[in-house]
Image 1: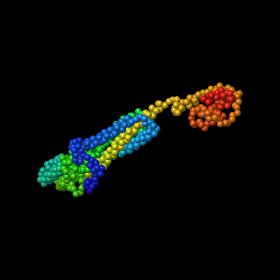
Image 2: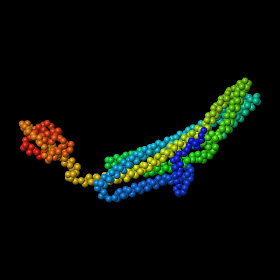
Image 3: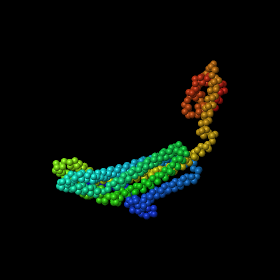
Length: 535
């Protein structure tokens, strides 16, 4: 059986975190040994949280300076090149913030899962160790109860039955001494009840805290992702109210990111201090409950170490074997003389057989391999998965802080560009022929007027069936006619390839009746109604 020192080697990141400065709130150095009950050590972990708070202050100060410079800069930077450069800057800043936020959320999910797995392995190992100790306590209690009550009562009855035979009575007294000797050895075992209660309490508190920690981080990750997506949506839709709302939530999330960074860093450093020298801490914590030899036996579990229970278990086994031999002799020699003693002797034999089975189970449970495996599993869960997950959560907090800092820098500039664009749009002259809206409105009115005139003419000429259409000559229409007719179709370029009216071919939307009416027009009628088509 190899020792725990060979099986457990603290990971490199625990040594790295253990070298972090340990300073109390009075800036006095503190020992790096894990001592959570000491006030100075607690202050050293709080100091790490204060460092994260200082980072938050510097971050907010830089953002305030940037926003002040943005608000105080000149407003005459609206030339075309400046617009293009600012728009490009905002776009790339939004892309960078989105990518960093997505990476941060992915890292956060992984770190949260790793930490949860490590804590689950810790609690699982604690419950397994508790089951082992409960089994030991149950076997010891049951064996002692059987020896003190069942065996003593039957030996008293047999003493009355064998009162006339001094040799049989002497055998019964010898068995009582063996029974007392077994009880003495069992009482010499450690009181596992206290250790069992401590393990259960630690496991329950750890599981309770871990559940709410995991749930809190899950909500933080979802919140970060939603805010990032909403900010990108606000930039895409150029929604000022959405950008303003996301800016407020961005500041709150930035504060939350730095706060989580401080908590994770302090927890990771404290856990690493334990992982560097876990044996030393456990030896100090259990010295008032269990002897150091027993704790050392379970922590290292080496073949070179003596079993502290070996003597007690050996005495138990020998006493039990001696009692079984005495019972076999009484059954062979005393029962023929005292038939009434057979029932009590068989009951004692059954009790001794059960005690022997309990002895074998007790020997297996007291072996160091079971508890040592639980101990190593707990260490691996905490120091490998747990601390590694905390480091990933620290990285998530840093990336989230960077992402929201970039987002808070991009949103005010985008908000300002949207405001300038809307102001410039409102300042346009509706009569400006280069105004797209003005051209659309003019084209729309021209289209409605021309169609109305032509339809009116069609109604008035519908009954003139006696007119014959003149011979049409295919000629190239003048440019002015082409432009006027393009207005008739709403000024839409998609009608440029449609045969025009002046070319003898009406638009596809005309009905056969309207076409016949148009072709039946005389030159005087065309000159009279021509203005309706050449508006």
